[in-house]
Length: 411
Image 1: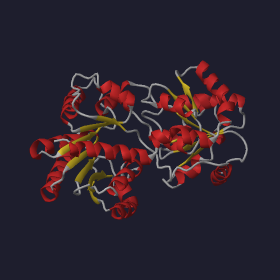
Image 2: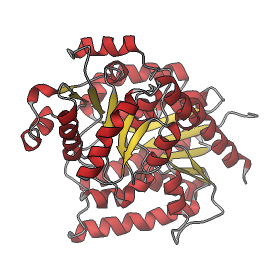
Image 3: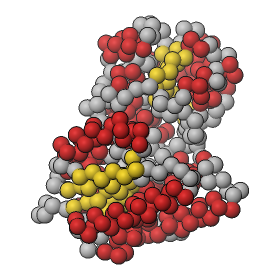
Image 4: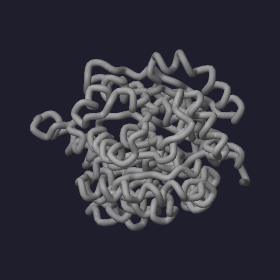
């Protein structure tokens, strides 16, 4: 590069959150090596900041990244978000006055509001890193209940803003090809604005290829038997993640594999899972629940033979790229997933590393059980090899780099 480009990266998520550590910092650290100078403006939850701020500071300092953490406000609902938005605006404009950023990289909609405002006022380049159909996710989840006058207004407001984002951005990032295709159908879509597809990639140096030794090591740590079928689930439960359907599938599996165990790697309250067991006649001793740090996640996940993940196949999930899918496939662990979520079905079929359920029915669950012997015979190195071009962090950094160059080449 002829000159160092200064970029303000704005996100309402925290760098101390799991996604900040997996889906922001690795990319920015990689891009920093290409000569970009980043300042991150993020919002941090108090308890996570106190626990992980030194870890994040170590990462940002090593990469030459400036980090400006702000306190995330939880209460009161809705009003707290407007309060944080005002604080975000003040800080961003203050930083821009001193730094004169060449581009604002905005993660999702709240940040994009500010990025567009800065572009309109200062002419700074604006990258809309969409991360999904946020307003529709809130609607689909019921968080913005459309029976409420207030939430109908909020939804309509952000749909209007969404149209402005995609029309005035210098570049758009979609997590999925399915999402990109849908955006191109929207009335507000501007074909003159370039759009790239970059999924939630996996750090393959962290999520390394599994082995028999790794499996035994993980099972020993978790107190699982060395033999017998072990299924895993990675991530939070509730909201989008279909716990009932996953437990129902496990009940079907138990009919054929009596010694099977199902373990959850999650920060969610164990009671959310345990309270559902009786409904499916699952014994408590057949379910293991544990928390894990980022360092422990691959160790524990490798204890399993197959990973299960069901996500609600609603409209907004066309734009969803589950982080866990890339991480699990990178380790060479086969998966059982459902269709109707972003590019999940296409990626799993391409990887030849799993079974895709098309509806949550007894017939499909039986077919998933019947597919298990084949899944257990799959070679981890082949699964990993087949998804490198999709989920490799190196590829993801390259795609961001191409998007940046395209932005700065345009006038």
